[in-house]
Image (cartoon, rainbow, N blue to C red; front, side, top):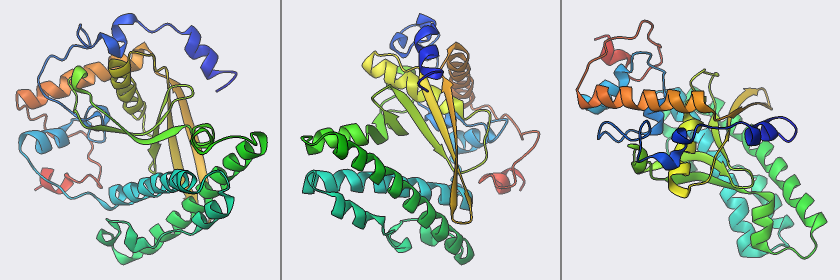
Amino acid sequence: MLRGLLPRSRETAVAEELRGWHWHEPPLLPIYDVPLGVFEVAGEYCASARDLYLRRVLGVKAPPNPEMIEGGLLHEAVGRLVLQFKRTIYSTGVDCLTELEKLSILPSLSSFAQASALPPERQFSLEDKLGALWRFEHRRIMARFEDVLAKQPYIGPDALVATALPVTIEQRMSGSFLGLSAHLSADAFLFSEPMLVDLKFGPREPFHRLSTTGYALVLESLHEYPVNVGCVVYVQFKGERVLIERDFHLIDDELRQRFIEARDEKARLVEEEIDPGLAPECRPNCQYHKKCHE
């Protein structure tokens, strides 16, 4: 980041018409009045986008598959831990290390809303993953707070949070200017060097960078400052270990153009009620697999 991507992000010129604040002009100006979610535009899990047709045109409601439920619960755990750290500091002040240590205990699985939707054998596996992830994040966040407190003896609670955890979890935003949903939510946003973070608990896919691109365009349309960097964080588990792979990337002209083209193509599919047909290869864990192959 410091010696590679950030200097490049400041040197690489993004075409002015592809900045989010040009939402009122082509090519960013929406062609169709179909407010899609960023996940609907960026997601290519169904290569033909028939999942979008079934959901938005036919109104088919399919239950989330086990992988989606598990990923959502792991997302929830990370967000909950970060919020508990911030809440503890605001309520106890900077003499908070003893209270922060207590956060190392994982909440019961029953406190996670959708956990009961998983079969029992997957619940046991999920609890192991939640425990490993919770302990991993707790140790790392504790180290950040202790480091800041050691260097800044007169720091206050608000500055401590802003310095040690300069991240907003589930950043809410409206994509209305760009013809997207008015109720978008990015996994995380870092303000120190504006960067969108997307957290994934599945295999790496070439279209994942489109999600960070979409959120970057939305933030630019709302606040009129450049967002040039994205990061997709891939998390896997190996026994008690948490394995992390980070895909830092520039949100360049190519990614922006791809996102805009996907937005217009999928909005047209919904507006004109076009059935794109089955994908060349259907993923067996797709939540619409049964519907498509009736």
